[in-house]
Length: 325
Image (cartoon, rainbow, N blue to C red; front, top):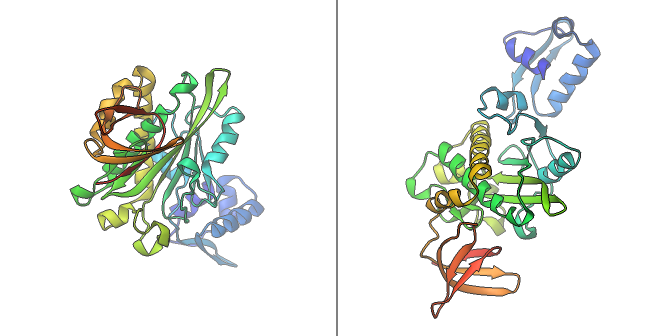
């Protein structure tokens, strides 16, 4: 990306391949190949046989050098892998984690061809519009505690979205248990946690988060038009994906550090304050069936408490919640 930086610095004029080659100590062939790669990525670079190259237009890309320039984290996204397109950022991150990638290693993609959500659902992932990121974490916790990281991711995503959202307060981000972020009752973000173990202890977790950023109503597939939204739709204006990505990585690190130091019990109140599900009628789809009741609150381990007709109470550790009213 040094060549891109050089073209940016001298964007007001043509700059010859020989000058770039001398300044960056790379071959002219390398310059030519890299310019071709930049063009393939969507950069408009004018070329003149006797004058060289000039950068005329840039696409909206989440380039590592741009993101890390203002990023306030110690380890999250300090090793950052950027892909123009992939099947799933979680799949790429799992491969990296299995090869020993350090904690905080992050994968971002401009588009996904097989983006995935919870419960085997797909995640609509058009190019250069939204944020698709997966972060490798290596907390020293037993496997039964892994689902709590889904809630950690939800807190971080809700806080990050709140930092960049500048629209009607009633459409601000809220958490629907366990990990959906809603704006005006429509889903704007979701989290997918995948883990690998070494015996009874966790080896690594991949925390994948997708956020609909600048989707327009017309971009939504018919089957998602009533249930999905974006920051643009909710707020009425475009949001910088770079600003959101930095906010998300910073919030993930801060929330994860609190979880690692104090456990989820300390975060449960923060999670509860970011949700408006409490006291509302819900239908919960479980592996063994469906229950309906009133969402009471969150236990210290992240389980959802639902009061049933007749006064009984149910602890839900995994399920799909639908708000009834």
